Image 1 (cartoon, one colour):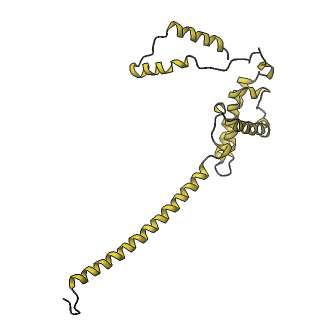
Image 2: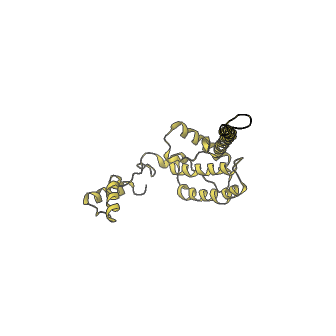
Image 3: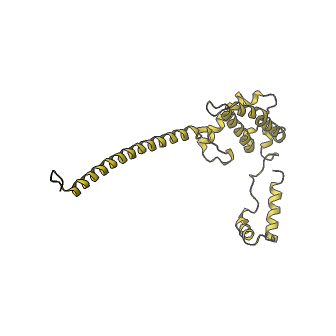
Length: 210
């Protein structure tokens, strides 16, 4: 017993409990601080992601894979406006009257339009992107369009005219699973059958020159 009549063991135990209680309070406060820091970090990450993610018509989309009529209408309207305001201002630019009848041409012009918007974006745009658009992207598209569509006009798309062609199809696409299995298991292609050769020739005759 101590001079004041307390059991030393109980006194020591009480002090240990007090020490542990204070330590627990410190740990609890630290945990709360870390929770606040993590919450702030999550908010900051979400904000940065929102700023860097593509928005609206800046999202990367392929015209050739378009399935939403409303989105297609928006994209095409935006492209037509941009063609008049920007693309056709350059002396080497050409746009055939039948441009809307050429899906691949629209694909080319739309990515050029989106690259132009990215180059001049108020946050992501840089003079290096602008220079690349003027020096490489735009002249490249202009050359390809002149070569592929320079002599085309809308009357060529009339029924029976040169551009009145069936939609392109992939020859013998139904054989892809068979070829895939043969190649993955033997490393060899199958010898084509007479029927397959006939179907291939029919496809070639239908789409030749398309």
